[in-house]
Length: 584
Image (cartoon, rainbow, N blue to C red; front, side, top):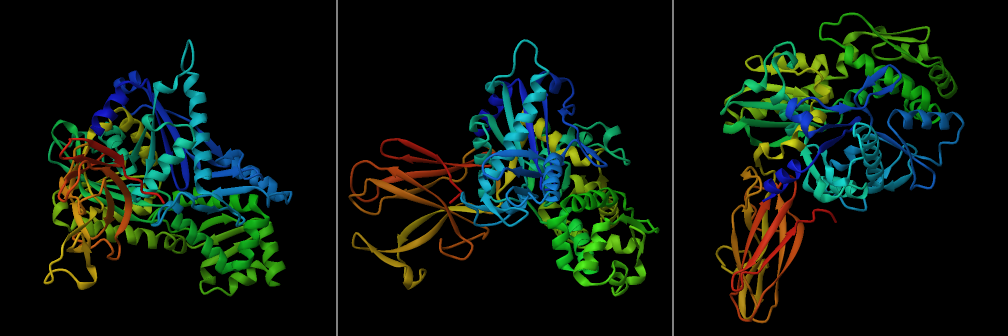
């Protein structure tokens, strides 16, 4: 049913518009239906520019006015405006958020989550995300409507796609959907795309000449072929394994996995390196009082980061703002050169005028924790029996453009073909547009969690713990039983119901059955109060008549990113449906 709805929505849409909301960079792209039918990978997108950087994405940062409600700017414009405010010492009352997406990469996410801005002030996360999405949406509409003659686009003409990491939990995905709703995108016009899936679709459509130096295209992979998608972004690294099905659909073989090993870990290492030279207090003051210089320094590092080659043997040069050296003198009472000379690797770092000259091995070490984590995780995944037969690794995402990461992947997995498409950093964005046109191409996914229902059963002394017993209508029962519907790692056919379970009334007079739905990463939970088990929703199902043993059939239907629970009262055939609410 979900697949049918998504397909109908795609067919009725004149335009598919995708927003790739990244940790470090975000962007949007769109294509009209007739353009997609002619050339699926061709999309229209915005050129963002800031300093030396020009890209189809801009930095994920938003500036909100002092009232804490009104949007001011996003991306490079937000960075520059906040830097200007800091120069005039007028920034303290403004709200500047940067790289805030990673806040959703956590358990216990709720609607009242607060985000802390650059100066420690807090605002509603839902507000910050919705204002950002609204700006990207409105920005896209301005360009797309310029392409329409004889009037603008109507809401019903556009299908929206919003990307999220596949390793996010269900609550984080729902949070993004609700933020999009507040930004003016209605639920029935929005599809959530999992980032590695979107990138995989993009690569499946690429011709050989756009598949990097190896000139190997996934479009040549026929039914039964398997490949691993390594989506290395700024914040997270998403990894999934796909098998090509007959007809070109894709089947997920292993549940999405990964971690917070993206490109921002390299930025953090550079920040820590500077902190070792100048001291934490200097860095804090530099960031707070000289935001423009701080932004320029890290923009310069972003450019240099992309140029570091495995075989680089010459020093890497960073221009250090004069004010940075001044702060070292002011706070520590010594020159920047004196601070460098006290470091353990002083002979590998030299200050020449306003240039910091660093040995390449030091800069390469900034990448090591992330790369090592990625290689270890991919190796573990490929050793699992379900992933046997993988023939290639497809590297996508902005961090996959790192030559060091590419070199490590090719060296570690020399027995596999490594495919790095041209513009790997745009694979998710362009793939999200394709997914909007072809939502049913992902036919099977693997459940990340075990889902079930909290039930009571007759108490069996030899099986159930004494503390679980409870008397119900004169009968000794065991409470908190986890009745499993779907196990973690189980294959889910998108849009089709999974295992059906039947439950009965426990009292003669009850007029409704309260069904509490739970999730856990455990494979075989016995009780709903075990560690790691979380209640994710409740459904009240009306039941007719009276007496014990009145039956309700419960089945779970897994769509793209949401779960619909369908409850049928056996006696009357009455059906109650609801989507699970993952947020508190």
